[in-house]
Image (cartoon, rainbow, N blue to C red; front, top):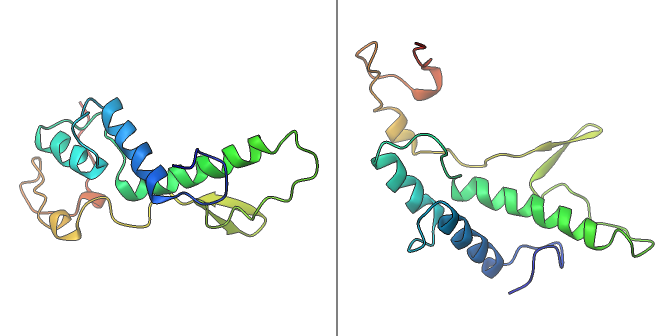
Length: 133
């Protein structure tokens, strides 16, 4: 396994190791996939402290790997880092924007079936405003 920041690429082994570690941090040492932990947490009704999706985690690890690579070369003199675009960021004019997710957090078919408790109808989650107390 390649340690974080040794090069610009996140190997599948490095990703799986990070993913398994995150599952363990969330109290699921037997799980090795964050999407399985998400499913388990949601099925138990736990909405707070939600673990990221596998897609979001991959992008976060790419950003962390890139940052570690910069730090590891910071004191080594002249270093020309690879462009950050594609390492969890996207170039937007003169700035870099974080890419949070490339996929939907839940299947679209599930979003279509979510039932609102306050208005008693099936609505998309994205347009639903949570009722405040």
